[in-house]
Length: 278
Image 1 (cartoon, helix red, strand yellow):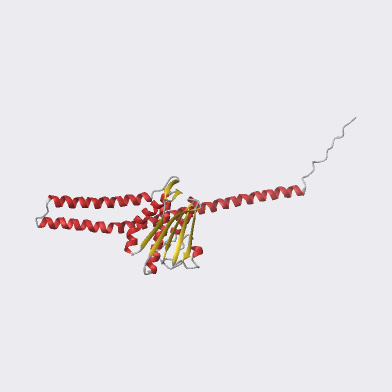
Image 2 (spheres, one colour; image 1 turned 45 degrees about the vertical axis):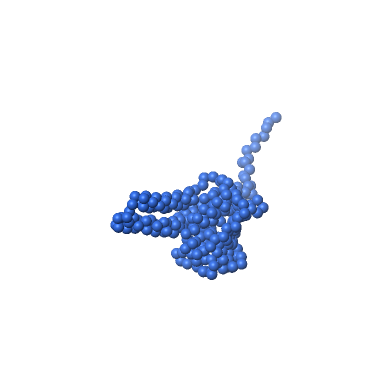
């Protein structure tokens, strides 16, 4: 029995199969294009974030230099008076060893205070490497010490209400920068609006296992149309050259992204209130 050999050509692929492969290839190319565009967009976002962080640090450094200048003004004045006094006493022949020792001791105390001020400021601008537990009351106190000279020069009174020590877990120095930004912002508003008795109230509490810090001023509040944009990058209500518009934006990033908390702003009575939850 002979087997029949089929010499017919192999069946050509169907039009449907060709279309399917072509469609699949188009989809793969579209996916690759989308992935490339997404990668470029993420790189651009990261680049802008890094630029904002850099600008924020520069703004914070400017605030630091301003506060050092105010903190040093009185000690430098006292040093000048001591030197003038020693010179005068020497010229009239009354500079005794006891007076010299006393004036030198006082001068060294002033110099030590000025040196310690720089170290305190530098400590707060060092980046934390890992999250740690810290006492919010202490950070608030140190922040107020940092900015106290500019508050006093503007006749701004500060009231702090805290019954117990309140702790949080996060980056202490970044939290300090948030407090500094918000308090400095309240100070600038009060200087601009000039209420009869400028006041900043700070309350520190625990609420539902969260640490809550509320910072309130009596500067008249935030305009209604501004509130939705108050944390936008580069948005500022200050005049030209007086604000970068990144302080509150970076504060929100620090609290919500780095600390897993929440930062909000709203109007109360005769001013604005910022609420930090961590």
